[in-house]
Length: 450
Image (cartoon, rainbow, N blue to C red; front, side):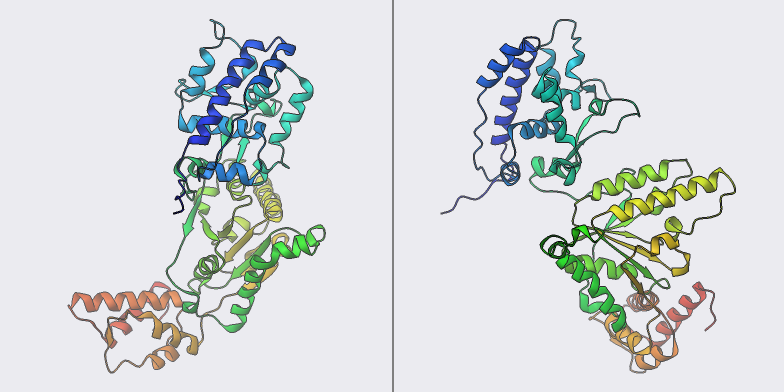
């Protein structure tokens, strides 16, 4: 009988930590004796990792990681497993005054724990060998898989400060992967101003004009075949990476629902960007917020959905004052990040004309969402009611669909109102009058007369 895999086994991580402890002790003891250090470091046995079925094992095996890469990964992971480990191991081996700046590191907010930096990595893996240090720094380059896959990075530092003084940060998804055995999706926060969208609806529940559906399928084609197009067919040199689409049309016509269903169909996670958390009145903060968002999305199987995007991606203005100048800089920064993003970005706007021309020139798709016609409205009405209810005999959905020009969102609001009215009567029958009252309420919300 095949033994079940245990993705929460820490056997290999423990082996790597033992090796790291030996590395710290040897490097500190022999730092100023380069010849002795070289000999003693060579004596430290390389951990023999075994297939314990853990996510850590699968990861280091899949990436064919070198010992140096494993050391960096474990250094970044340890504060999440045992916050006091590095502090205890390093302080116990330092001189009595604990003054040894070569090892780098910063203190945690509460000043209790040692957190590794890029300098810590250089010290442990290269000592004072400049050639070796230069090679080790490549582990933090944009070309390394650590950066390409958004696994770990050095925290940004002030201009003019050595980059290696930045704190070593393992991205949250990978902390969860190694500690909990699976990646958890990021939650809405100031550091990640986006909400995960899911739906139980199916693709067949989407009622759109055939032309619109055909254009949506073009996006699906890109998701399924872009890798072949760019790599196998060699188009990466000729085409911009990523895909950018604009959904435009009145509210309630299915833009958000379509983006969510597209994620379900393609196996991609959909995140709706909360613009209220992104846009800041403070100079430079909007760019900082967006940078954090795009950095988290690098090489993820995500759809970034900017709803009411004209608030952020609107037309640039003539420069009249400093505010206009920085507002235009925000738009330019957005343009750059969107153009360089390798994934799928969908912008939604009620009015296509509100979007800056510099953005629209770089979109692969412009997809119009319109108020459904009578035939499509009838389909929405027919599919909208709960299966447990019955309609009053005098209800004529065809007549209602022809007479009242409503969006899909409006129709669902009416169905909710009518269903609640039936429940309040302790009945499962939807009354015609309840539907008409619900329709009247929808028109009144929009300032229209019935």
